[in-house]
Length: 616
Image 1: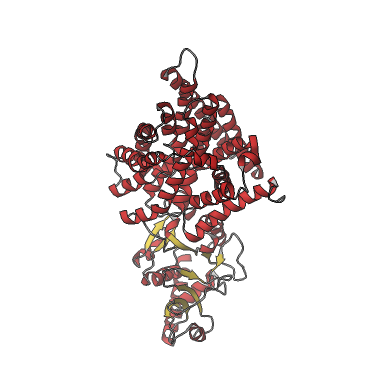
Image 2: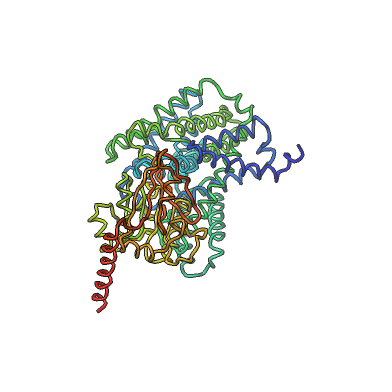
């Protein structure tokens, strides 16, 4: 018991539980937020191991507020204005129309459904317009819906977070203001002025960073810490001007950085993304652990009416009215109208104002905390577990990515694309050269011209559509750069590359070397000119994997195995997929006959002669 009571052990346990829940969610396909909520409740009110108020005391509020600031900044970093080409109108309508409608309807639902006073109802209704990146991000990570839908939900969640907080600030100021000028106009002007100043601070910090970093005024190893401290400092300064305006500062700062050129931006973004995952995990465990039995006992049966109205009236009506004249298909509008999970920001802000109003002696304020937790629990479970099902029923679920992305259009890679396409696998050939892609187009393969690094980071190519990427350009350094840069997004085990050096070995961060032998680029293309080809072999009870291996000639080897569930596993120097009955094995094999070998040699000689004439 002494060990469990150690604060150091509890901090480690919070991290373990949060990341563990996210890992289980990844393995099972369940919503991570729901699992973190369950784990936090078990560790908190059920087992009593974690009691945030007892364990952290006065540090609990600043820890949560600073964590939310970093999470919102990381969300702002993902808000690239290019995404608004398709979803800009819908995002504007969601913020300017759906938000106010949701506030009005939410206020009415809290008053008539939960029986709260109009003042408390208006405060709760303002907070409940937020959805937030802490819940939308993990949810979208497990879904494959159209990019328009993802962008609308992402932008709405990040932009509405500070707006909901500021609504609560204004209403709280109106409720508690005791001076002679307690009117909505003066309070609104104060809030707007503070918000404008907070936005200016965020923009100034963003432009300052994008001026300092490219000019080498901050060394590479200090860029990430420098940026983190700048985010925290900007948030604190704005929050001192007026509570919760710091959320605007960090959001605006993130958006500025996302839309201006800055060296090391991808590395910095990944640092912030990793930090945000840790903070979301930890803070959500802490917040759900605060749900003690006393708070649960304050939950009244009539609160259920409020939850029903919020889920089935407030959200659908506000979204469908706002998107009435948008260009989004009605199926996508219905999906957006259903998805609105609340998370850390809603609970943190509600808890903050609940404490202040209870201390102020305002009647009914004690109901805010149990109601906010009820909303978070209800929306996370309702939306988290139903999102994939609803997307499937509406016909907008794009399913698990099963395609193969091949970077580098050559005779060898085109031949690989053809054999994969013959197995009904979606193949995309990407190359910077339009001339290199001509042959791929002639073979009726899908092509994309452009640098894969720029295209992926600009979301012109959605990596989620592909289960594996083959990097097969003739530039070994570029191959390593691609795998190192895109590995964190796709997973290093989902990227294989060709090497231009047969002695090269696969390195961590540089992707796996294709083939068990690690055959290099030049030898593979020489063999292809000599008539070597790709073949597919069905593995059965009669023709087993052992028989298949015995039939391979010298130099021949398997490239990939296609499983019954449409997964395709590639062989590499450090990957040996198991071949089972029912699998289809793709191999790179020698020509079948001497005539074919002779034709291959003739083709190789013709290529050499053509190259010599071109050189002359």
